[in-house]
Image (cartoon, rainbow, N blue to C red; front, side, top):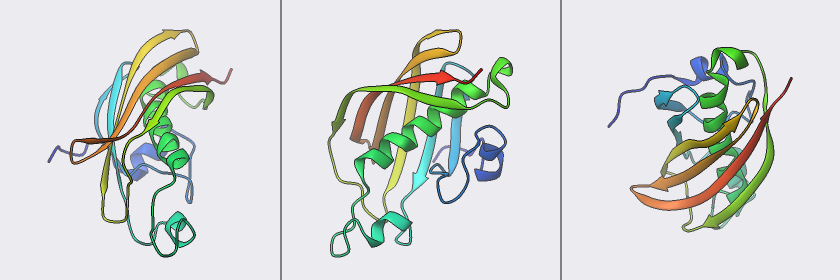
Length: 145
């Protein structure tokens, strides 16, 4: 298991998300503005499982995309020029949902920034459980002025 580089409190020093919408638990690797590896532990009491679905709890795909975006935001907002800013979605492309993510799973989140011009960029994102891809996509972002 990789060492934890940042815990939730340290993550909240970089991105503005707060409970119940802070959706990453740890950052394991970080190259400011280049790539990030983060993790979300899926707990039975995560708020979405109660209603999605009561008899068969499954993490909503859009929330997994948001988890990837939050990991990517840590990567982008760790750059000194973006300290204290907010990164917003500018687009989501090539999304594929490949497996269900359920309570007890550990979701590994990886985002590589593949292009960036000033405050606008694109990240290639992969979420996986035990090495099996759950979600892949490209996330476009814009950092507020």
